[in-house]
Image 1: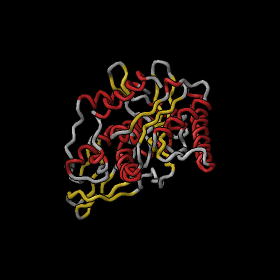
Image 2: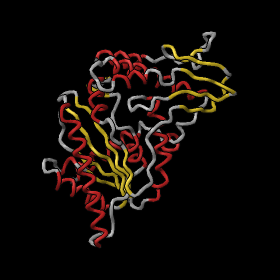
Image 3: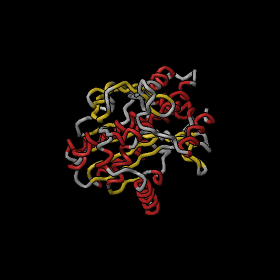
Image 4: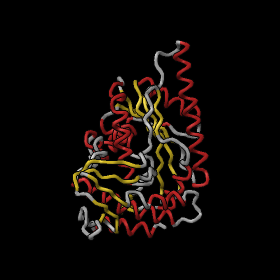
Length: 324
């Protein structure tokens, strides 16, 4: 692993963490107040546009699931200050992903904190086209399983005094310029020797991979945020402009159907699922609030949050149409 590559990746995560919320704030995303409802409205506004756009991909095997997301948080039932709503639990839903991220952090932050000498590991393979993405991801998962078993056996035989303990996450990005996909793993594990061995084993089993594309380094709070960001970037930045590529997202979501994003190793598993029905105390007046355009309205037409999409959000929304 080259020094320049190591430094470049470290700087990139540091840069990304500047735009990320701190862990204590992220861990509270599942709780709500009146002010946070406006942020939820922003997520719902974009999530609705995305679900409709994805739903218009008629030949997708996830077509029905995309349309199901259209109804996520569509109606809010307020009773004695508590608001109850249905959640779609979809990986492409921005509303559910914020809850999922908070849930993952809440579930794993304590066991991760107990790991000694934490390292952040990145494992990659060469980019592939859409037709090979599903096969490539499954080969990666199988390869990592073999590495985990190999290192476990070495410890059992007494050859090593460590094995993999930590969390592995699958992530996939899309390159618009080459029209290819980049599936990769992020891990937080205990011990530099363990991290180094994982990279060595990965390169041994994947001769087409280069050492420059792999990485391991000391983990910090930015590493943990990077680990728990969800596996597909819904919003991409291309030539300085933010956009949403529906076709590529559909390819990624279809390729990941039935597969887990997070895999704990030597740590108790936390389910990635978001409950279908969630009730939260927010402190608003009783009633039924129904989503329309960019806000929830009661029976008299009174807006719940008074959220108004910014010009940037409107541009991003328009970019969804262009990506179809």
